Length: 309
Image 1: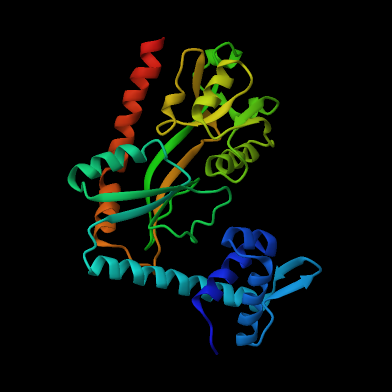
Image 2: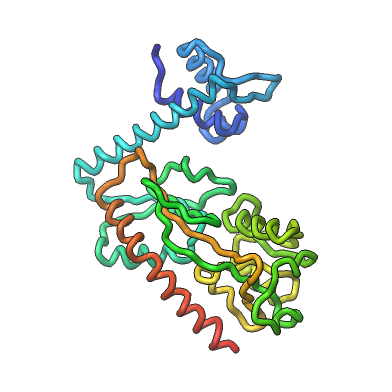
């Protein structure tokens, strides 16, 4: 059995996309070249990995088995490369991070970390929607859920309440808190489907007994802020990490029913290799992330809140 690393890489991408055309584009290959690679892998394994119907392909049971092991092999190979680089004391230390939450806090953390480790370089990647948090190619991943997560490769860094941002002229703005169910017929300004905060917000709306009517989708807190100010809808706002949404003309209302919170987590590969520098960064995050987040929120509250009332 002669299987090459390239065949596993090409198969893994194709298995994720289940589309030869898209996979070939991502891999910068011609479709015939990609098809030949997959056929060669199938010949080596003596099984078909995809069910084919015209131009459509679907990963079959054998393909799912191979996909699981191929991903493990590729992760271990990457870990081997990283450990070799670390063992040879490569001067440029690069830490890679995927982000689907807490993007406003990470620059502060990196700035502070670089005060003690100025030779560290960072590669930051924005996670796409519907990311699989156990399957990422970076050293670390930031994500959020409605519940805490703590295991051998994940730690919860921060818990924060979700507030409901509403225009100042809404009648509910005179209240001390709101019931989410009272906004069932209002338009919501939200992140795209599959994003962490969008999934969390949808979960709480379902719990309150309704499916939110999305008026606008945006991944920018500032865009969301301006649309709320214009009276075009309401939005879920994380109290700490989205505190820059505070602005004259907007009320950030505590939600009394249901209680809406989210947890921000840091995750890393349980079977991958982390350099000494990456381990230092992980420990720095665990020890200081909440401190930096609260400090950031307090400064933003002063700048965008009290100073503009």
